[in-house]
Image: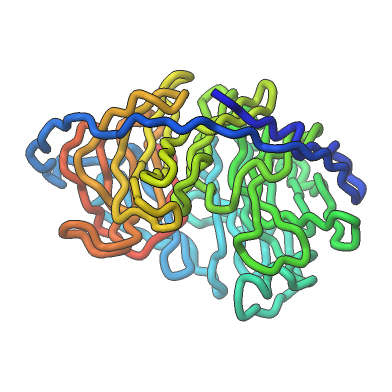
Length: 393
């Protein structure tokens, strides 16, 4: 299957000084796939009683600007933080469940229950901007806003956005500027958010844009190989749904906003090549994808929906299993939803979703647990939440 090499298209040697060296290439074309995801389904079985249901681990989430925790047995909710300013983003340590979050432009660390609060890094007070474009073009926001902290897989470091990309070594509390951006350079690329570490801690998936920006659609995703290279513009900004293989050898990028042939891609870390593996039947069927989960090097699960218009999102997405080459579709569940956010269990036996729109008996903003055994969806006793994260079991 044709592929494109994003290391040839946008390759930048990582330096701590301002400046970028960019090498450009082109995307190759992709022959359309013609198979339709229409296998037979097993009927739904009896509803699982809530009193016998348990989550894989406690669930952490944002609600009304604070971090909350839902117990694994779903019987109790607890507000973890009591910040005066709303929390913008947070993450949990994969080692001990400690919290890191941003509030009032400060990077704050606490224990899993919210105790032992410590301000790790303090930024200046910033004015609110009227819209996203104004924020992305605001010099103070670019140089001083602290955003999207993410814990390293070994729990020893925290990476975050502030005037580029910064990293805290927790043993020493030292802050290292991995990449200092400059809007006065010939190619003023700005780091907006950190999305993920790779499981082996070697790569960072980030979002970027070129300053000044005219429209939010002009953003992209890039891949940073720590200490080595930055691979620019590997995907468009709607592909913020992704999954790493457990060994970090592959990265899947899913697009729930547009139904083109790049709406599902598999990227190989060994040679930094991405392959377009989406269903794509030009002028007839366009497929959209969301929230993949990598089963092994040969298989994945992903939500998918079809539309007659590449710009018209389907009314629902159904969970499928398919090969890593993009073929062999098999329905995992018979129901369909429009998921806003998705959080897979570690072993892949189910996925938590928030609903972007009403579905069946569930209103928009409901939170549902979907098992791959195709029992009916189980609604959780929470609504209007975001930033879903698993706590320690």
